[in-house]
Image (cartoon, rainbow, N blue to C red):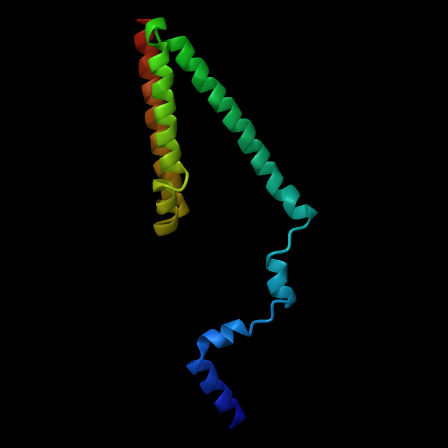
Length: 132
């Protein structure tokens, strides 16, 4: 009879049942514990991403400086900044974030890969026009 009463209480008061969770439970606390191994595990991809971003940013600015005519160089750097900000919007929490959450991580990566391909084609076209 006591078990039935407890079950009725949990059904009638689900919020209270959740509030009674034991925050000192090792399974719960272990989920949020950060130790040296976890920091090292996360540090490697963050360091590699930083190196990659530094290399890409440098290459982009070098490409603009090399490909843009002198009289349009300021405009070209402004366009680079505009394109980068739109790229950050689509990649960082914008469209790609929505795709990641609503569809799948694969959909988000596919979306971003298509945009990188379009950017590469645009760069190749501009280099070809420059060389002609």
